[in-house]
Length: 79
Image 1 (cartoon, rainbow, N blue to C red):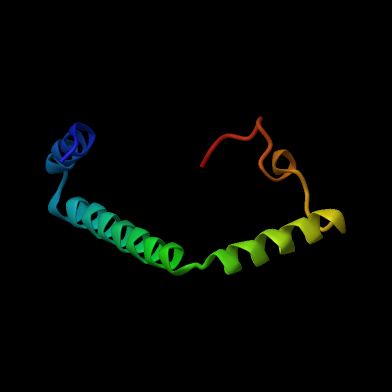
Image 2: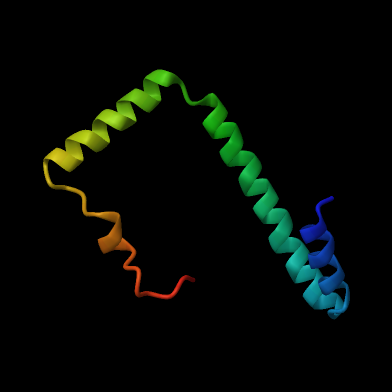
C-alpha cells in the first residue's frame, strides 16, 4: 500500500461509520471502473485504434472539432 493511500485511510478512520461506508463505496466503484476500462483497452486492436485515429482526423479536417483550450478554458476552476 502506498504512503498516500495509507494517509487517506488514516483520515477516513476518523469519520463516522456512514461517511466511511460512503467513501468506501465510491472507492470500490472507482476500482471497478478502472478494471473495466483496463479490460476494454487491452481488448482494443491496432485496427480499431487506427480507425478511431482516422475518424478523428476526418472530423478535424471537416471542422467538426474544437480546440481543447476552448472546451476547457484555463481560467475555469477544476472540478
